[in-house]
Image 1 (cartoon, rainbow, N blue to C red):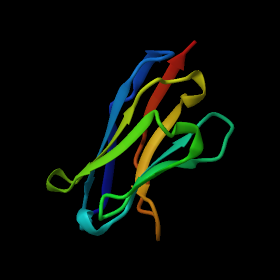
Image 2 (cartoon, rainbow, N blue to C red):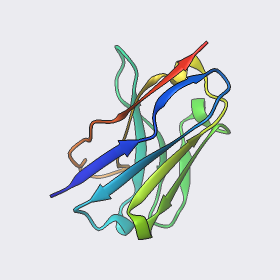
Image 3 (spheres, rainbow, N blue to C red):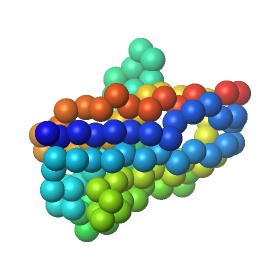
Image 4 (cartoon, rainbow, N blue to C red):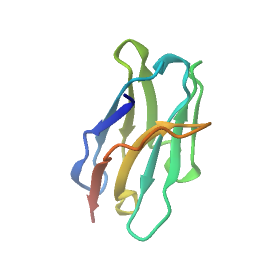
Length: 115
């Protein structure tokens, strides 16, 4: 059974940092490009960062230079290091495949950045 479990969210002040983790099971993790998505209240879910099976990374413009995505294939886990957080980063963060057919979404982890 495919499962994605996100963790690491919380309440942080503007300028603070958080590290999110997403543990995947039920898939051959290493061959999948993985991504972090976020959905802010009243907005569409958007892909903010992706890492390929070859460890290449891509970011949406609004997080470039502040967020870093990484993966540990031995742990079937993808991470998102978020620095210099802004109130507009407030959202529920999810992980999933970065391309192809999406897996069942996990519950996500809430990130709240106070001003």
